[in-house]
Every structure is written in C-alpha cells, then in structure tokens.
Length: 277
Ligand code: PAF
Image (cartoon, rainbow, N blue to C red; front, top):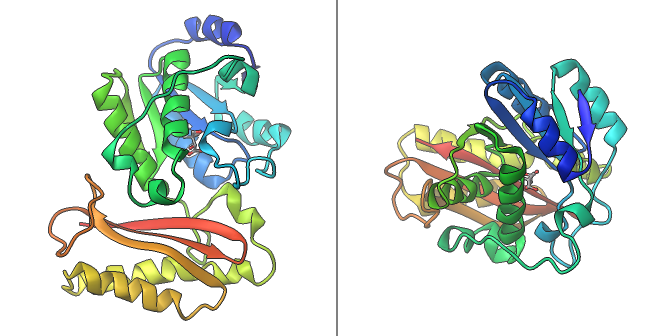
C-alpha cells in the first residue's frame, strides 16, 4: 500500500495500476462503514485507491472543519490488511492552490434537505469529487447510502458531466443499537450517545407503518417526529419523505422513496435515512 501526497506522484502511481480501478473517497477517521466500501471495491475491482482529504470547501463557516477528527496513522493501519493499492492524502494547498476559482454545481437536487441548512456544502462536495475523479480516473466509485442526498447529487453529476464512472451506493453500516456509523459519532458525549439510537428507532417505526400499508407521507413523517419527540436530547432540523430520485416532498408514497432526517443530539448534528420501496 503506497501513501501519496502530490498530484504528480498520484498520476505516476495511477499509471502503474492494473485493470479496473475502484475509488473510495473519504475524509479519513475511518470506521467500519468506510471499511465495508473498501472491501466491496476490492471484491469488484483489480486495484483500489482510497482518498483521505478533509475537504474545507464543504464545511460552512460555523461548522466543524477545525475539530473534524483526523488520524492518518490509525487510518493506514486499518486499511493495510484490506489490500488497498494507493492512498491519496493531499494537502489543502494541493487541492485548492492560491488563486483557485473553479467550482462544480448541481442545481435543484442540492436545494432541499441538507442543501437548505448547509448552503455551500454540495458545491464543495461536487467540486472535490470531480477533482478526485479527474486525478484518479477510476472505473468505479463507492459511496455510502447514509449520505443519501450526496449520493443522488453525485449520481446526477456523473450523468450530466459524462464521467465514464460507475457509482456504487453501499448500505449504511450500523452500530448494534442502530446508530448509523459516522466519523462524527465520536463527538457524542455521555448520555447523548445512547440517546442517538432514537434516530434509527424513529425511521424504523415509520418503515414498519409503511410495511403495514401506510402510504400517506405526512403520517409517515409524523411517526418519525413523534418518536424523536420522546427523546429530550434531540432537536429536529428536518424530517422528510421524498421521491428517491428527485428529492421532492411527497403527499403519497408510490415509487421508491427516501425517508430522511437531520437532528441535533446535544451539540452533535446527525443525519440518517431509510428507503421505502
Ligand atoms: O462523504 C464524504 O466523506 C465526503 O463528502 C466526500 C465524498 C469524501 C467528499 O469530501
């Protein structure tokens, strides 16, 4: 496993990779969710590249860029046994050199949900993912279902910009109590951690109602809201029941849909979702 910083070293190492190349883009501080993406890439591609870059342009001014967890040595130890070929860990100066002024933007899909609360977030995500695609030139790229809107936005960008890349969206990995794995879970202090299990309980309660025949989107949102309201440490930012592809809010659930939420648990912001189909 080679760890590379500069773009010229990455390009040289990329040329030496054989066969199909799978890219797993990450911001580091890897958890089992990331490792499951890497394992899947390893099964499906001859060579695997993992990027580790805490991308400043996807963080808002009052967000957690400076305290975002970082531990490259730990990440490398976790990846070594998985057979990763290359790790690209560029600096912010390499990705965004002085005078940088080019951005990639997906329009309507980035407006609701996360985009409504984090206005510049997706512009940062689509720009860095474009740069990663250009630098690594993968055949396949692996993302998690946990960031469902991010996955939809990147899928749209791949189509619109004709990237010859197959995107794989992999299932959310959960802790034993249902909490979706996230590098940000380590911010959860004391009683906030057990309280955070309510997110998946709330989504599961609505999913059970859907399985029992409930198709009214407002009723499904209410089930999520009411379950979340039983946990006083949780403050809801949004609960959505939307079309899976357009992310437009629904009145009635018919095709594949996305039930998603964003909440604060104490000082920690968490998102999660389940699909209805
Ligand atoms: O999902 C993430 O970790 C990030 O948004 C990504 C895709 C690596 C871009 O920085």
